[in-house]
Length: 517
Ligand SMILES: [Zn+2]
Image 1 (cartoon, helix red, strand yellow):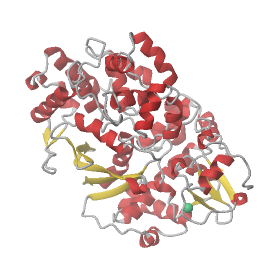
Image 2 (cartoon, rainbow, N blue to C red):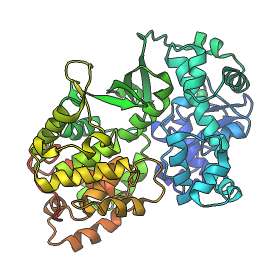
Image 3 (spheres, helix red, strand yellow):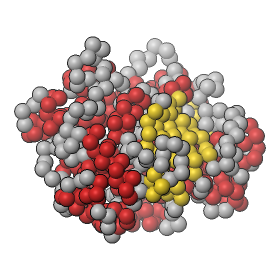
Image 4 (cartoon, protein in one colour):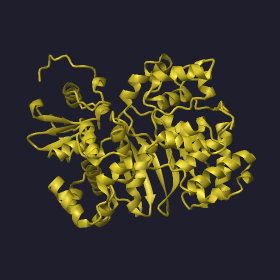
């Protein structure tokens, strides 16, 4: 490649169209730009290995490089994952990156539950399209079939378990969803030309963990505003269930009939979050890790988001002051929805206190560390509970019971959501849940990047707008990232401060809602 070629700026790589611009890829590869990690992969013709843009190995000549939008595409083209840069460790691809809504929904389903036995046919049926059409869409947007995407994902997780845990191989096979050890061995041997045991022998870091404890590095594309994420979660941490201290977040969890806990902290040097998981059932690890990734918004394509939001001057200054802010997700949709109802028209602090009381009255005891004493109560428990005992108004208590009942009856689910509009409509059918609450839940529980609590009084105040109509209009330019814009406006620089970078996070803002429940 000639050095004189005028290269476009890095954000020319339009991830929304999945058409890779080789010049952009090339420049990112040569400079090992971490902002592109996970946005494309490089297949090197002579070695038949595929790499992340940040691979520390000597850079290959341009003529020997192929660029792929996904790891699955590189795998389908016959390239093997590099053992040095470990493509399984790259930040994920944001699920909404495809221009195709169908692909985005399919990716969401695959990431929640893999591609189950029904395979592509079943997936296509759930999406209401033909399986051939679905394959074509996948090939166009991701360069790989749905099965290849699901296989690569499973293989990558298996590799992570081999490298980063001391789980016995039989357990690794099951935890990564291989069904049997023979299939797992065969898949690893074909992909890596090594047995699982040989791979573990060369894994660079030997982490010896106590039984039932695991530690994973979960990568992101920098920048990541960890302090902002923690500040948001800290104000809302439910006493007994969650705690934010010493720069980390910890919480008690319940999954597949088993209780446990995890903690997350920043590893800035490796552009990663460190997740420490304590859980008795290793088969749940995959799901736990995926949920943590979603909760901390690790797949976000920051460059793309910032490029759009900088178009609004009041956001541009905030982005400059605090680059890398993410939309805080949640561990559990039901828990978040309850929290959102509690927070209607009272301060965040007040809602946190109420949540703590509900947990003490109705949550299960949990023998975690000293700060984690309870599990958040399940929908089954709250559906029949007298929640007014926690000091809620009658109407608020009725709303929580109705929500819990709808969740028990599977009228409302927080997983496998294909139609967000229908989800919002069902939530709003519950007396006491209005558009603001529903949009807030979509923003944090479904990770909808364009969710927008339109009736938010605090946003009016921050933007000095006179009406909700003006706010709606202003927000049009933030699409499809309105949830990120909202997070910025709620969090950054709303109080006059000398540095202008103060993270406020609603310290004193009651009733964010215009709606009256
Ligand atoms: Zn590599």
